[in-house]
Image (cartoon, rainbow, N blue to C red; front, top):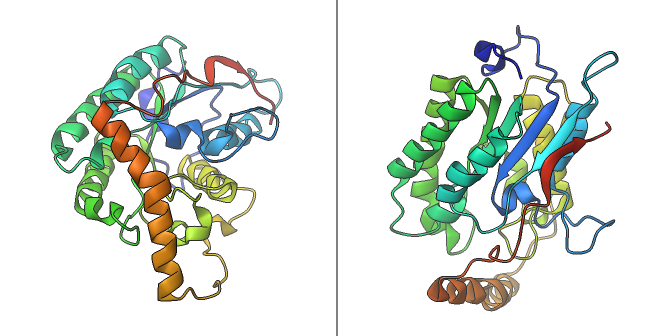
Length: 277
C-alpha cells in the first residue's frame, strides 16, 4: 500500500498517474455490473469496475507487482451498508485503490436526507484515505429524462455537488457521470432504465480510467451515439406503461415488504485475485 496519500490526489495534466496494483470496488448494482451480462458465467455480470480493472492491469508494466482485483458490490445495497461493512471488508484486503459508489438507492426515496448521506460518504472516504488507498468516487447520472425517477433530480444534483466537494477535501478521483452526455441516450440503458448496457459500462470504464489520469485506448467514449429513429408519443407511452408494469411495480412491492433485490446475493469477487490486462 502506498503511504503517500498525496500521490492519489485528483489528477491533473502535469501529474503522473499511479500504477495501482490492488483495486477493490464497493457499492451497489452499478458497481456489481448489472446489466452487463458475463457470457462466461450464469447470472453474473461484468460491469464498468471489472472493465476498469482490466485497463489498470495493463498499466502495471514489467518488473512491477502483479495486479489484483476484488469486487464487493451487491445490488440493492444502501449507503449504510456500503459505507459501513463494505468499507471495512475492503480495508481488510489492503487495497491501494478503492472505488466507492453508493447512495443512489437511498436517493430514490423521497424522504432521503442527502446531507446526511454525504456526511456518511465523507466519513468513509476519510477512512479509506487514511489507510493510504486512493479513492474513486462517481456522481449520479442526470435523471432529467427518466420517467418517475426525474423526481429525484434535485436530490441527485445536491449529492453530486457534495461528491465534488468531498473529492476536493480528500484528494479523491471522481467519475463525472452527471456530465456524461452519452448516457442521456436510452440505447445505453437496459430495459429496466436503471442499469447500463454492456456499451454503457464499457464507456464508464473508460471515463473512470481517464479520471484516474490515464490516457484511454480510445477517446470516443464521451461522444453521443448517432441520432436514432424518432419515437412517436403513442409508442413512448406504451413503452413507459410496460416499464412501469415490469420494473417499477416489483420494486414498489419489494419496498413494501422491506426486501431488497440483493438479499440473497453475495459479493461476486470477495477476495483480491490476479487479473491480466
